[in-house]
Length: 443
Image (cartoon, rainbow, N blue to C red; front, side):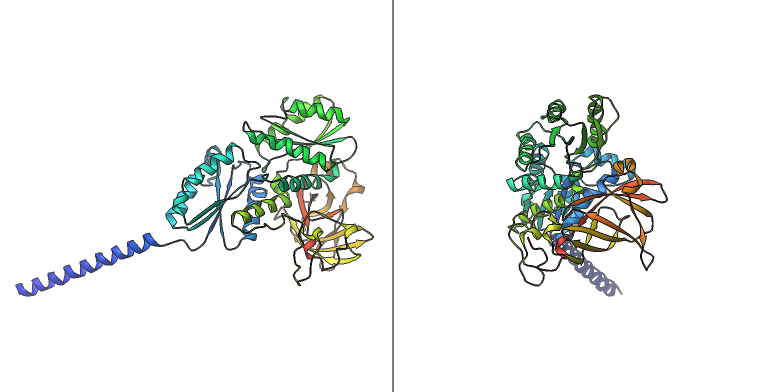
């Protein structure tokens, strides 16, 4: 009996040893495991304005996710203050940069690409680079993309984007003023260089100032006065239309840019729209991420003709810059339209081109809007009924609208009248030339 008990104890001990060994092997295996996908970490300053965050930072992340499906796109903010506000107010938890890097290292991620959404390489960008670089030995590869404005080509592209997206304001007697943040670093020269780029493109009615550096508001007001303008359109030169745009620029306090211009006798219109709401700006970040991935030259950064889907050559107009109706052969074409709002989804678009004039007949997925206006919601509120584009029901009972547009591949401001809310909402559309058949772009 005693011998049987000893034998049983021996067997139990052996089993325990095997189990412990198995656990040790499992733990060792888990430690050595690696994350299966490369990660694209999008680093932004952040904003507590939820609506603006969705159509700016969220839109950039969505564009990167679409462009690089092999990468897992993640988010991090540099502002701990904003992170804390969102956590307390909305129960929304967003990693700061260190937390995001530690998490990837712990998960065994091997390849990491960082794409910041900063405008320039100022203190925020350099601090982020320093913070990220401390983790370089944790990954097999770690690369960092450039901010929005880095190369000469970036300045040229952004100047075309902001003027194309505000072309409706570029008229005699109106000054289009962009408000940047400003920085104490040498990168503040970015604003002067962009102003020079605008001037070199012939845009004499565009002016750039900053909230916290130079050019100051006083500098801009002096330039606007010298231009002879009587009306001023204010827009943020920032990725997100957050606190600065809503308060420093468009607020009702006496020291806001809006009130300062009004006090000086100008008619003032404010457009609360972050740069990242522009399709072309999002594509610039897509291209910078491509360069960080080693995919050079990045798509869309040169005028080199790219092959069409059928293998034929496209004209440079299809791959770089906005396309005008005068460049397109007469005809009717089905094209894709991007909208910055899920509540304003375009399900179909027939582009009709006749002698250089373009009309886009768009079909919406919903029934909530009974008229549109080409311009901002603020401008629509001051417009006459004859300027509105009414909804026309098609055979399927869907609402369609015939929009006379000037350009493809650039932002088109469009206000939509909500039947339920009885108010105008700002929307942005991009009509894509890439869907046109090969050869129809003739110039």
